Picture 1 (cartoon, rainbow, N blue to C red):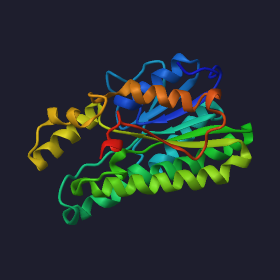
Picture 2: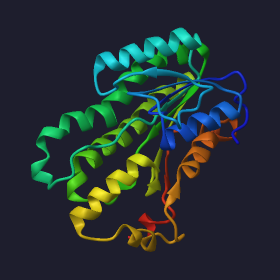
Picture 3: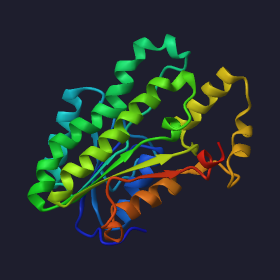
Picture 4: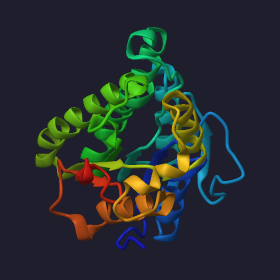
Length: 248
């Protein structure tokens, strides 16, 4: 469980299920007050968090959510940009219509939300921003090239933002999960499996640690990164994939 979060005010996007919900619950358990968002809540959305319906693929959606978060919390100490995903699974040259949405939700949503919330963090004298990326940036299949490209942009942005905000006491870090068992990832895996003609059970065989990840694996890492125990970490990207990319 992360420590040092009593009284901290956290914003987590995409917190209705999967990795996002696990991150929200970890922060709540550590004493933070949390506002989270998604298009709709689910039965897995932590009830102790304040939930705000928001479509973060649009500038207006981000602005509305940021305003609601600041109104509820009075200020922000932790921002976790977790919202993301992709809808089209086709050849790289056949996904043109989905590029804008994919870039908006996986990259620009974080850029816009940070722009809205960083002034509060500066006023507070510091804070932590976490970006959820993906190992798709390391080994991308053609049918998710738009997703990988958006996450690659997020990782580059993560480094530059970390350098810019370090003098203000704001740390900026990224986390790149591998194959994790979540509702969204499960749906994506099945589509990729159909496209490749492979079997989903074969995926675990490609992971040196022998299993697909769990949401808690990622949430625990995020909990560490936002805690005082990680106070000298910024600009980094932590890959959490059971060793998958090291075996490529």
